[in-house]
Image (cartoon, rainbow, N blue to C red):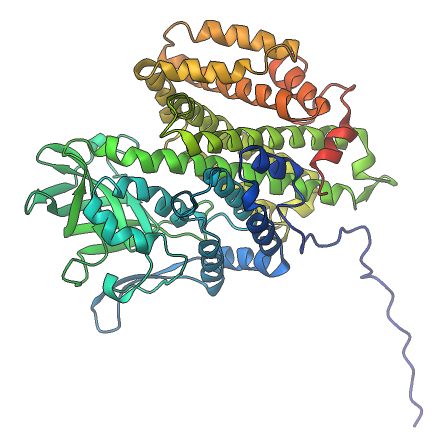
Length: 549
C-alpha cells in the first residue's frame, strides 16, 4: 500500500512585527531619573537594596506574580463548614510571594527601622518600583508603615506592637499575638452615610475604663481586612476618636470583627477591600477623645505620599511599555519610534513621568526632615496635597495615552496596560477625592500660612531659568496673596503642582525636558491632549533620557 506524503501546511502563523517580551530587566538601574533622585535625596546608601529589588521586580517571575494575583482575586470565607465565624480572606500564592518579597525589602517599615538619612526617599523609590509590577499589595504595606507614628502616641501600645510591625517576616495566618512575630495594620474610617465626611460617622465607642472601649458599628470601607489590627474612628462620649482595634482581644480570643463582604472594584483587584461590622469589638483609644481626625491624620498624610508614589510608578511603567513597543513595531515601513507624531506623544509622556518622579522624590525628602525642620514640615503639608491631587489625576490620562501607543495590542490584558489603567483611579480616590484634597489645600493655607511661604520658597529656586516659569510664579504669588473661594480650589491645586514641577525640572533635568515642560504646561504652546508639543521640541533627547539605559 502506497503512503501518500502530505505537503507541509502554509506558513499562516509566522509571527512578524511583534516586540519581544519586556521582562528580566532592572526597574531601578534602567530609570536614570529615579536613580539620580535617590542620590540627590541623600539615600545613595540604599542603591544596592534598590538594585536588588528592581532586578527581582523586573524579573519574568515577579511579573507573572502580578498577573496571577490580579487574575485570581481574594475570596472571603465568613464561616467554616460547621457554621462558626471564620472571617478570613484567602489569597492566591502569587499575592503571598509579592508580600513576602516587599516585607523583606522593608517597604512597610524603612523610615522607622533605618537610622541613616534619606529613608523616606529610599522607600518612595522602592514603592515606585513595586507599583510597576503589582500595586495592589502595597495597600497594607502603606497603612502598616504609617500606623507607626500614630501608635507611638501611646508608648505602652508601641512597646507591645511596634517590634511586630517592624518585623520583615511575612506571616499571613490569623493567629493571636503570642503566636506570631509579625503584624500588619489596616484602616477603617469610612462609613456609608458619610464617605469623606468622617465626622458623620455613627460607629459608637463605649468606654470600659480610661483607655479600653467596646466598638459597635458598620464600616463601609475597611482596607486590607486580613491585617492583624486596624486604626479605626468611632464616636466616643467626648466625640470622634481614634482607636487601635486588633483581630484578637487581650485574652487572645477572636475579637468581634466580622467581614460582611469584599468590594468588587474597578481595579486594585489583587487587594481585599471590605465592609466590616464591629459588634462590641475591643479596642484601645489612641490620643484624646474628640481628636480622632487629628490623631489618624499622620497615617492619612503618609498614605497620600504613597498614592503619589504608586501613580508615578504606574506612569513610569506605562511609558516604558510604550517606548519598548514603539522601538520594535513597524507601521507604514518605519519603526513607530521614528515617526514624528509618535515621537511627540512619547516625549510628552516622558516629560509627564519625569515631572511626577521629581516631585515625588522631593516630597519624600521633606518627609525625612519634617519633624525636625519647620520649613520642611510646612512644605510637606501643602505640597503633598497639591501633588496628590495633580499627579494621581494626570496618571489616569497618562496611562490611557500610553495604552493607545500600542493600539489594539495595548487593550488586551496580556500587555499589562489595562491593569495599570484600572489601577490609577484608586490613587485619586484613596485618602481624599479631588474635591477633598483641593479644599484641604485651602485649609492648609488658612491654618498654616507658613506652608505657603515654604512652597513659594521652593518654587522660587527655579526663578530665572525659564520665562514661562517666571511668569507662572508671578501669577501664582498673586493668587496666594488672597483667600481663594472654594470654587477656585482645584485650579489653585493645579497651579501649585505645576509650579513645583517646573521649578524642579529646570534645576534637575536636562534643558530639553525642562524647556518642553515649561513651554507646554506653563506657556500656551500646548494642545488639550498628549502629543501636542511644539514641532521644534527635541524629541530625541527627551526619549533618550526616558528610555531604559
